[in-house]
Image (tube, rainbow, N blue to C red):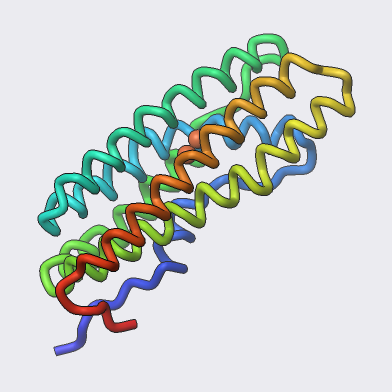
Length: 187
Ligand SMILES: [Fe+2]
Ligand SMILES: [Fe+2]
């Protein structure tokens, strides 16, 4: 029997659906959508995996972060009331489709190696959060500052601070998870 294999790259690819567009406004609009699918799809799915793997505390952490991603979407959407309503929905749709294609695989893998799947979910969550607080949102902030839009820059900075905190929480959770795992996960 062949073991179903899911790599961090596959999971990341599945959820890192936001697209870099021609203009910063279009890219930012894409990230409104990203915040919403992190809230509705990605982190709830990671919470489901953690529950199945017998890790209710990690499931709670994923749900707590999911709730904060919703806040980010609200903040960004408020920003867009001035800029015009962004086109939305494509990234969420893409994430839903991608999730469908890996879900059966995920469930099979969770049954065989629950710790491995949870460890990968945490690693992907860290990558997603790092990309946002180190790259995406600082760029939006700097762009807003360059355009003299202090209000938008402040909102983006708030998102940077929050995503940075999420990355810290997930890093601590991953360290703790690895320290308490009964057997080290095989690569
Ligand atoms: Fe976020
Ligand atoms: Fe986040």
